Amino acid sequence: MGFDTSGLLPLSDALQGMLEQLACCCDTEQLPLPEALGRILADDIASPLSVPPFDNSAMDGYAVRLADLAAGTPLIMAGKAFAGQPYQGEWPAGHCVRIMTGAPVPAGTDAVVMQEETRADGERITFLCQPVPGQNIRRAGSDMAKGACVLGAGTRLTPREMPLLASLGIAIVSVRRPLRVAIFSTGDELKPVGTPLAHGDIYDSNRYGVKAMLARLGCDCLDLGILPDNPDLLRAAFIRADQEADVLITTGGVSVGEADFTKQLLDELGEIGFWKLAIKPGKPFAFGRLPHAWFFGLPGNPVSAMVTFDQLVQPALAKLAGQRFERPLQLQAVAAEPLKKSPGRLDFQRGILCQGPNGLEVRSTGSQDSAVFSSLSRANCYIVLERERGRVAAGETVTVEPFGGLLL
Ligand code: AMP
Ligand code: MG
Image 1: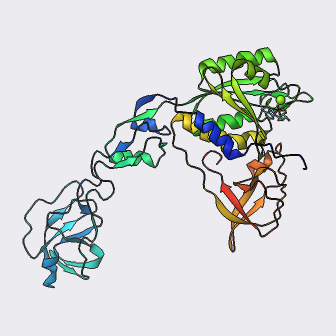
Image 2 (image 1 turned 180 degrees about the vertical axis):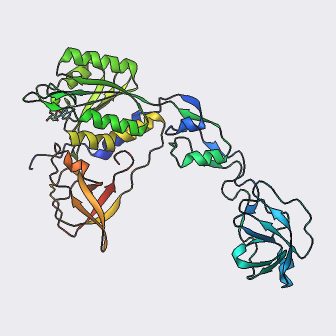
Image 3 (image 1 turned 120 degrees about the vertical axis):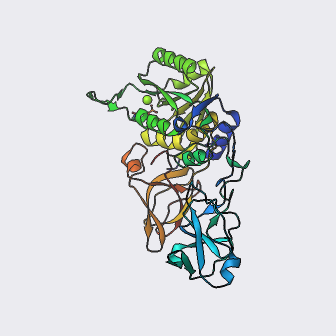
């Protein structure tokens, strides 16, 4: 409260400043389709064939010519067409063809009448309704036309793309190799899980969060563990990460405390900017380059580390990995209770979004202190409160950003 926030860097400027400097650094490799899940397409994919490849029936029923139906008398079944077994016989006037879903429609078919709209008496089929031309026929190329771009370079392959690529007969895909990201936590107080804590110690939680997010993004992670606030050990870790990874992400040590050696070392080893961001949580943040790797220094406070990773590092890693990044969906909701806020920073408060009787409602998860981790784990969205906004009264409309694939 009350401190001068005018010199803080807006999130959008920080993001733009980073993205302008970054370009994809991952080579291309060829993978069999099943192994490409989670990878990023290196090239546009043009459909090598039409899908569906031929006109076919959308229903189990009867293929008809409208001229034959006009007479109003029952039609005689000339034969049957199955998926994978087209009808190849004669089709004399006054006849129809029994057809199953997915079977190619015989040449000359105007429509398919679903069997529920017919009555069969042996081979004599009575039609209970008059079909319109094209009814129940899936036209060749109606899903994807031959030669059309069906997936753009930069698309991350999810379970939704796998059957699409298979439907095109594509067995090998050209994808980017995974981005290699080194991580470590800094702080004398940090202990790994599974070990006892001495007075003054806490468990290193950030590394588990960062690692989990990297796994979601499909990055290869080089985990360098916990480093004490010791310049020599930190220097060695920075050098190793620079040699072995595309990116180094650290947490802690980027503020101005007496044990914050990160700045000193990075001035020595690379070109790094230390930013005070106009967002809450997450004020201190470092970005820049080591001789061979990009560097992101996240704040030590666990919620700040997660939020700055999600909002700033995620789009940057996407660009380095060759992924097309889309900003997450933002919605409007009504604050179901007052929200504390002071003007000066863009707030990413942690909220619980739900469907109320009159539309979307959002509540706070409680204390928004950046060290309170439970505020994040109980949330399902950010409540994004504009920089100049003050306290929010119950009933006011606010912007919410449901957690995306990274945090869910
Ligand atoms: P620092 O940025 O190093 O000054 O850390 C800010 C706060 O975050 C301190 O309370 C640290 O103990 C805490 N912190 C730093 N790193 C971690 C970590 N890896 N896990 C949990 N808490 C951390
Ligand atoms: Mg520290």
